Length: 286
Image (cartoon, rainbow, N blue to C red):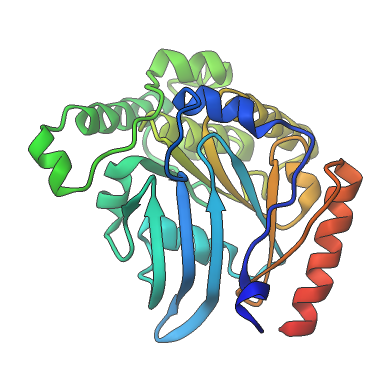
């Protein structure tokens, strides 16, 4: 496979990225929020990702689409510092975070909503939110010297517990319930709220509607549309393009750890068609 075939060319949808970029940074020219070059990563000495290249502008929403085992989670974990790359580079808003541990990447301005939600079964909703808000406050209270040591933090919108309860009123209704008593959809809302309280500039979402009933998945979909419209930069991993319809304005099809090129005319039908073509091309090279 050539270097060009490894490059992830964007698939534009109908939603205007420029409006979100203006909300994110006032429209000023700046480095991309996420810039990945020739990324190779895996587990136990084996490679899962092979030379991935992609760029996510500030205020953009990028979908990484692919089947199970394609490397989507590995990609998000590499960005979050949960997997150490064996090659290539990862830059967040111009800061090189390649191989940095998760707490350093988080301090730069990144939060992840992991696959499977991973809430604490014994803690109440209120306790989850208080802990996350406290962590977000500590990040913003860092001294300039400490920030320099961890690389400059990218500023994201500041979220409070009141903000996330307004966005997710069901959490307010369940504030005294323990994590293990929540439904799957409520746990996903809690995981999203917990990430937002870190006030990230870059939000990583790993299959956010996995295992949810259609009605709840639709509700989560609406929440993500709201966040995207507010200018938050988002990287979403999903097995199907339809699950990010109306949310993502760019997409990459990932298969066997390689990102296929794909282009579309900017319509939803074109988006799906482009990803189908990208999948077919990637499968031939796998």
